[in-house]
Image (tube, rainbow, N blue to C red; front, top):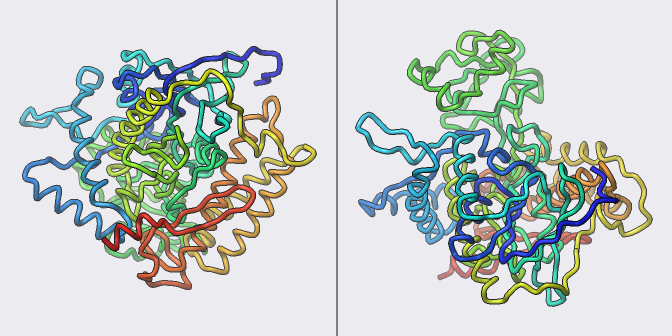
Length: 530
């Protein structure tokens, strides 16, 4: 991957979209339809990369008539979201998702029910992403595959002017000068082995923060998915019918409803946990190969019948993927607080629609579809209004690229171990307390001080060094936000603060690199007061 002797590919476009997953492809299509020239860069191959490509995503799909149905849906979500989501954003998301999915006719082969009605809500992830790749290709979007972005370009006035990255297969660097940039790089699971998330390392968070953007909702990162041990198969639908056992074969009691993470984590801290899926109804068993065609693969490989045999399970942390946090949205067009920079999908906070609980597959997918289009169209308008300056910008990446002190080799594996211990460890992240979070903050700050001062990615270590910097920065923001929210709310549960405190009826902002800060989203306070 050495880039030293290769040429730089210099390109110019109205809009640059960083990330080629669900949100990125919708953003690129919206920007192109708005008349902008668009370049999309993807760390992997646009059409197969990202968490959607391995899933069977549903969407938040509620018909407009009768109107009371959507109104009831929004009221219910506002209540279960603990009041930090926004009814207006929920309404916009439901409306645009309803309008958008039918436009994929001709690119995606939608299924039909027994009455011949087209089924738009639930799609097959691999085919969905292939359809979106066909869509952006048909619109004339320039796509650079296997071309991860490393850093943003910024003008002297603080506005974003493009990005720079590497070409992993063709060699050399790329540099795109753009009138506006959409960050659609997804969230991060901190390399927890969550299926489809290996390339999701929080790159967009770090790049945007270096430009001056802030984040919101980063404390909501305690969503875990059950999976067979030693497997990445985190397709969880079938586990709704699971019976769990401890090492002695005793059934582990589960509370009513979907919340199984805490009792499972408590049991796993004591020893192995096993399960079987014998309670799965026959009609569901028959549908699994269609809904989640890869779900049975590890069981077949191991010679296990999950509907009859017991097998050991683990929990994979989902970080900010099915967590809530991301870049703060500063306007209806999904702009950030930095001029010329927009955010979409899991790279953006989903508090606006999900609230303090996970959006799961349906709300998150609808958010990706909608926020992608708002960001793409907004970026196109910004580019038209402000033009694309051919020069006068500079690359602004720091950690892992330009060390603050004398460079030396940093142990990336050891740094990742620190990140994962604080962000994924059940005892620290699920069973939170002020004392534990304070220790996590200290450990992560120490790791950052060393990494920022010394780490410089070169050659084959360039990308992984920068990815590690992004995950470490993200971990610092998550820990600081969780410590600042001195209560329990939604998925954020504090053992020492078990109650919800009305003093925290607001979103918590976080940012900073040299020094992490937290604050209150004043806009949300004004909304609640009005």
